[in-house]
Image (cartoon, rainbow, N blue to C red; front, side, top):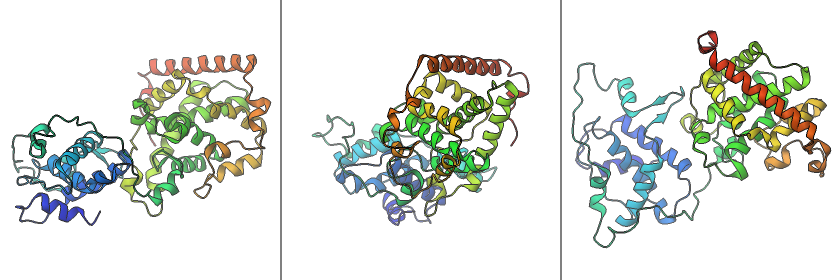
Length: 392
């Protein structure tokens, strides 16, 4: 936790005579960490008040459940700037936090788990002020008509070294994506598809090195990873075996992916990075989540991009050199993703394997229709065992 948070919290609660509650300290620290991801770039004048605003938000969110005394904010920046920063962070910071277990934990559930409130203890009740009431003390007549929309950030805080190790220097993906892909490929003995899966996640969730604005993608990164992995693995299976993917095989592949992903949080770690920070954006998923994510990818035709076209070449070569390169999808490889994907020689993009011929279009159309049909069949058979999540 930042060393400035505890005195900051005490300055916000000057009449609080006890030791600061641990849930308040944890929430303030969690909000500060998340703000560096969801609002990573702020103006210099706003950056100095980041920790203060996160502590203030933590106090506001827990003031009823912890029965905190009146909050007396004295921000380190002018009220106009602080109001804009506070509003921005309040809007982008989620109302819940994600712990190691991967399940969403609200502040109230954390309090119940910690045993602060006994089974018969009454939680104090008090009217919750509106956001306008909370910020009214910072307004002045000269600034009350100003637009509260946050200004475009101009400065960047120093990047987290652990984030660089986990996601790559140009990666806008969450830090857990790359090491989780490595873990999945190793556990499922499919190291050679690792780079293709990573390329798919980059193309869909972080095109051109910037996080996508697609709300569905940002809210479903974990099922999206499972879907991308499944589509790559199943496509390679069909190409190499020359067989259609029947329903039993579909279910087995999906179950293997789910089982491996459930083990990820216990086996994946990044040196120097806190677990709560590492797993921001992760969620627990079930078989239905994977089915819907697969359907979403096919529906949006995201597999028509370059990253998916390379699977055909991977199936044709299947050489050890490709396996070794994919297995070495490590942290020390700092080349841009496009220069690492299926590199053979400088004229790679001019080779015939990238040409979209009529035959390839026909094969893709048949594959797409077959995949959509199988997804629809499985969705309609939800009364059977497929409806039940496959146990790990």
